[in-house]
Figure 1 (cartoon, helix red, strand yellow):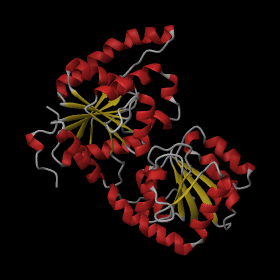
Figure 2: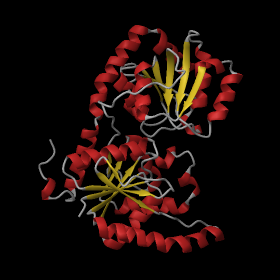
Figure 3: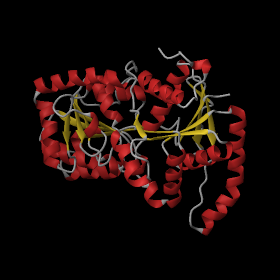
Figure 4: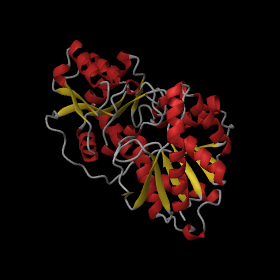
Length: 387
């Protein structure tokens, strides 16, 4: 019998904040004595059967939409998906279903919780306002499912205060019920090699190349900042905005100093962050800003968006700079300060390196374990196992 099934919207081999959160939380929970399994949505990927000693199950999560074709597809796929879920429930017998990032996985977990009377926990990663495809704006079923899940859940957590606030304002979460459990970072993650062609001096940004990440705003701010000619811009990640960003850099006259190396391995992320002049987070909407932790771990100054979680995370002028990315001149001024004011940059980099100690995965897993214990999920087998 498993203590907890982490029901994730996405998992390895896909990469991103949710995937990293679930992988690391699962591994650290296992280290602390929790019998944990990951259930993730079948997206057609070759998902490993086990990651860091944690079993992984792939489950279909079809949802109907208001079109005849979609309804017919659900009639065909729904019963098979139900059998797969029933099989996972029999095999793992989890005491709690812990949804990580609510999507179709959350709707199916809610149904499983109702039918089997298992405890339900919901963790939001800002998908209600930060999703690039605006899934909640386009799906009434998702909106209704989330409302129902929040009402049933024994515990609801969000990765930042603004995430919890959005659940209260728009999805009916009772005030005071939501708990903030932040994202984390591996302080000992090993660096790899930087991508070929990486310049000696650069402003770094990391993430999926989608509109809400605001990399087009960063290109504009970088051009407006008029930094020394040997300072370049590196935007690591892949996505549909790649070609648009290249065109914009050319239009603004900074194509020769703008580098888009594509998807990065984790070791490359660590290496690039360590060598950056500054790490920029220019998102139009950002639930938490795990990239901020990457910069803090590297001890480099961070310039982060005021739009979302980073505004609660970063202490402006102390361990980073905050600026509205829609205000090109303000964001450009912050980049200039980070690159040109070496004393301030060093001071803020040191403060970030000290602050990141608050965001270890061991601490995050410990907070989850405390919540599991508070509702009687983590039984005697794991009692007293937390360091």
